[in-house]
Length: 276
Ligand SMILES: NC(=O)C1=CN([C@@H]2O[C@H](COP(=O)(O)OP(=O)(O)OC[C@H]3O[C@@H](n4cnc5c(N)ncnc54)[C@H](O)[C@@H]3O)[C@@H](O)[C@H]2O)C=CC1
Ligand SMILES: [Mg+2]
Ligand SMILES: [Zn+2]
Image 1 (cartoon, rainbow, N blue to C red):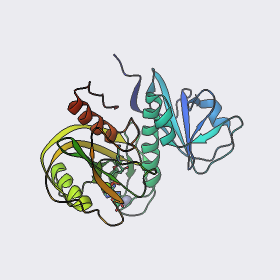
Image 2: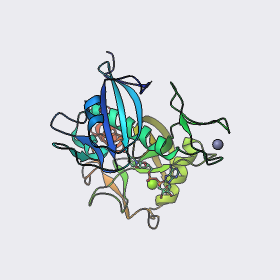
Image 3: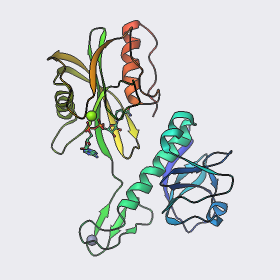
Image 4: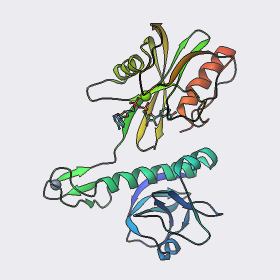
């Protein structure tokens, strides 16, 4: 089956196609969703910082209008990417997630980090370029490890002070330079709960555009130690029995997938599928 959405670097001098608009308040939407006829959208009173041709949806070109600020468009409203993930069509969320990552990266690379001069978009390539330095900047992706640690019928879940009240999730953290995925996972689990793990197994990955994480998901078994929560980062962490779990993260997240797979295996149920 051909995918509905494929990314591409499109020439913004070509007319037509669909466009999405992104401001500090999220994406513009109306009753028909977040995609608008591009020529119509460009006639609205928007403060456009940059335009990017980002790909094809059902064969039609899609562009991003990255805005400096939020403006009123009659009949339309603004909504954050997270809300599109939670209650929207998954393909549209993928389009918007990609648009958000390209918009953020291009906005943050308008000037060369080496010499401070303005950078320009490279035609037909997803890169910003500084001519004097011959320096290219590519979209930023931050590898993050996420792991479900288990001990028989028990799973180790924790709460960050940033989470929705009551929700517990798997442990996660960003890779540091010089680390393998496994080194990072072992360090993060040690730092956050002072537990040692063994039998690390890769489970799958997920793009997490908040703002540019690439989640690499693992399962690991408990080896030793008692839970001690990292100050400021971890509000609470506990072993939960698979028959008695707390409120869990959103169903489309890889955190939820890691938990659901393990629970399904313990209880002999059908395994879930990881949303891409
Ligand atoms: N899709 C999913 O199911 C889940 C995704 N996540 C994501 O995983 C990522 C990592 O999780 P956290 O526990 O927040 O990370 P973490 O445990 O490494 O702590 C966050 C700290 O890392 C540092 N940091 C921030 N951005 C960084 C970067 N790009 N590279 C290196 N260090 C950075 C900052 O000091 C920040 O306070 C986040 O983007 C989070 O949103 C977390 C849990 C579930
Ligand atoms: Mg963490
Ligand atoms: Zn430069």
